[in-house]
Length: 228
Image (cartoon, rainbow, N blue to C red; front, top):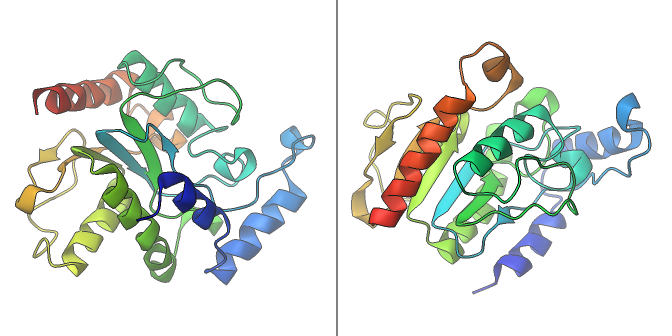
């Protein structure tokens, strides 16, 4: 079995999806004016976090000028600012911000990954692209063996449930409807599944997701993993 570090190197070298390869590299060349001085990462973004984590957080995909720029998941954009601030308040991180790979951020008992490892155009990955990335997530699950999974947003949750359905571990999605703050005891000794609205600007600027709401979910997860 490969290690997490070996898996990360495999992810970084991936070129399975021509559309995503072209888009991430185009963005890395054109850049955004505010980040003109940056050398963009422009490659798939591997998972990040504690190799002994009991909680795995699953997002959708790196942002074009966030993770695709910095090379770390949920880093360098407002969604990441919101998530890591909540992780800090809930006791999972040593600092409330995440700006670049060498900023000193450390997380405890949490590992963060994405259903798709490359920034997709319009933040909308194709089903084939989700399928191409699925083996990386499956390998992370085998290596980490988390007690809990937090899906950020309905698309990330459906990606996870789709994997379970394909493997015959659940029969359908209908028993696990997406709602913020919901949690499900999954069959067969699978990790408990928690769900939250995604910390997108659309959700956080409108108040659909507040810091208190996300911190509450994270603290509930913390209580669950300590009790189990």
